[in-house]
Length: 188
Image (tube, rainbow, N blue to C red; front, side, top):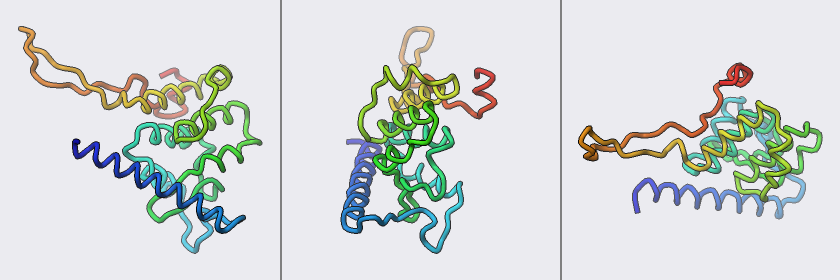
């Protein structure tokens, strides 16, 4: 087993342990949540985003779901009832997320369901959820699917003119994350 794979498995174990702790805490203390901002130390939006990215780091589908929520703009923010603060990590409770999206637009709900599924929540009906997305949201979802697949880590063999293998070249993502709303509007 490679050190990289061992590190990913260790992170997955940390993730499973954290989610089990969140569920136990909710059962043990009904009605209470460890919400961002509920402690004496308030986190800024950038700290929340970095905390969620830190929690997801190393597990491509988890990274993709978190990044989809971040870039969508509604799912990750300080004080969100589905975010649990554990110091340098911020955990997304997908059940709480899905319970809290009722007032969002149809497109925002679809993106949140797809993101929750990537994070490990219940499976989505792509026929229902993808068909109702606008151009901006489908661009985000396509990038999330490419990231979840690990396409940003793929490589190919490089050959010289004689056909002899010379090494490996890293390939770009099949569908990279859009840089900004401006890029989305321009179709880049």
